[in-house]
Length: 232
Image 1: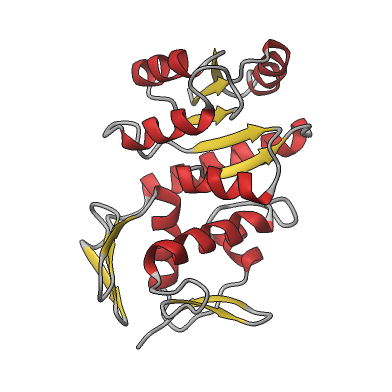
Image 2 (image 1 turned 45 degrees about the vertical axis):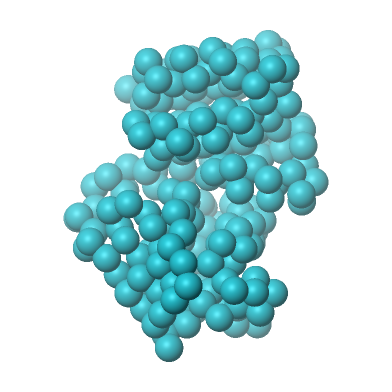
């Protein structure tokens, strides 16, 4: 049975999430970051729903620890937090989050996000093996270790950043709107995924791979249409 680890220091919130998920998933709860890491390393969950503001080790630290763990580095992470500023979301995605939902939240939206993340993970596991590398223009993506190489450097991508780059590089010359990426790449039903999810991941990728993120050369925006990869 699919297992989900819920991490929140507010017992009432954790209980609400647990009750919402339990009819469909096996749910474990941790009330602090240290216990969350211990449980994650013991059960290897299929998804972690993670608060940010916790005493001691906060959610950002937990996320970074999970991403640095060889066994847990690919586990999907959904931040569920009261921190809703753009800067907070940027920091969360930069730490390695797959998605970000702010409190107060609607349980129905949480369930939609959870299902989409888990469906995406299942699809990835069922796909045929990817090639060792894929190259488009001046970019080369190593599909075994998630490293992207430009003319100047090699960058380690998070799992979600890798998925986005792999999808765009697998369709050279095509332009993908944010809504299309949410639907095709991340399995969100129409009008449920947040456009911020795409914008934040694109922003973080540009900060990592572009010589000047304000004037991108590799990950391009086509005004009013979406995103594409430069082919030359």
